[in-house]
Image (cartoon, rainbow, N blue to C red; front, top):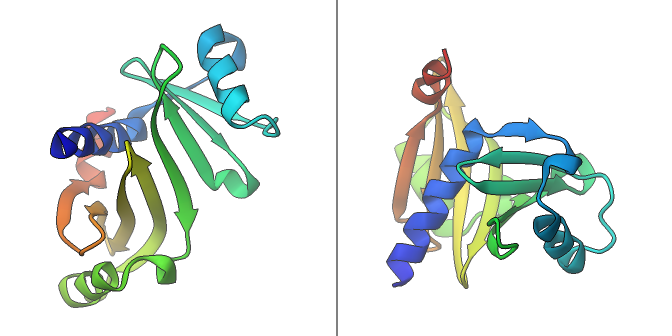
Length: 152
């Protein structure tokens, strides 16, 4: 069951990359209410929608995001972290397996009590979103160029 939840979270994380921005008025009322109950002090929220999920990005430099289902339940919470905050096992995999790549963004992702880590890396024309568990096991690798080209 944990693997199923983690798989859903990983698909959500990668799918949100293709989300479209929407106005707050276009977010279902129950989703807005659920978000406001969990984050009552957040006012400058950017909303996106993809595959029936709603992502609210907020905080300084949009450093946190919450993905909610239509019923208002939380699918995942992603928090931007410094690359040095990635678990040592993840940093080790990056330094050995992705030599010469630059970590351009790092996130801690929490889904149904499970924690995973995302590292967005690039080197020249190569650009990937890498999802790891806390032990450094690579769970998913998304070629951002391939997804970008799908938009055309």
